[in-house]
Length: 109
Length: 113
Image (cartoon, rainbow over all chains, first blue to last red; front, side):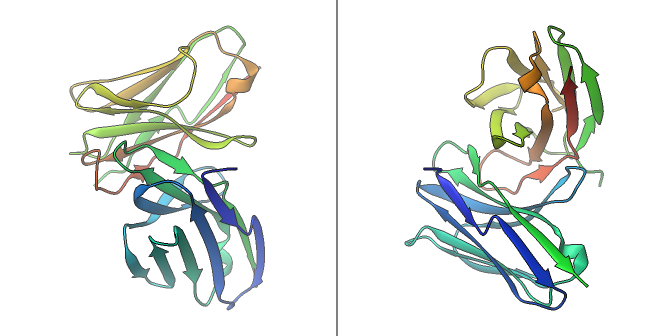
């Protein structure tokens, strides 16, 4: 079993829909990252969370440390949100990152 | 402020050769981490350098090595290339190893033929 599990693996949405991507982990962490990867490979860091909730524009990330679960929400989705979204956890005390397998999101107009 | 710069962007090598990839972190960042991304294994941690010292290492064979210079630029080297080394190699820079956000470069796509 992977230490970081993401769901769903693939997601298709119509423009304007509310999107939720989930991440569960089984290890002790000091922080959790949500990353966005567009075709071509470059990765953009969206959020770094250690507790609670963060919001940036149409993106919201939440984390529940007790339940070892995080969600990434996209409100009013747009075709330019189409990308792979990756959850990564920073292992407590080692600073190593372990990555989920990613969620491929496609938003159609 | 310039972002993380990786060079080259694309590289084709033959089996048995060796390759060196370069990563220039954001100005002022002293921590550089390297990652390998393949379709089968996803993203995996290779190693992290801070102030010219390797802090952490992932589970990769000794053919994979790296170093960091006094200006925080980092290089990774892969010797005796294998077909399975074909991947996107990403580096990320941070101001310091713990508690700070990582900023990723565009990656170097290595193809081994």
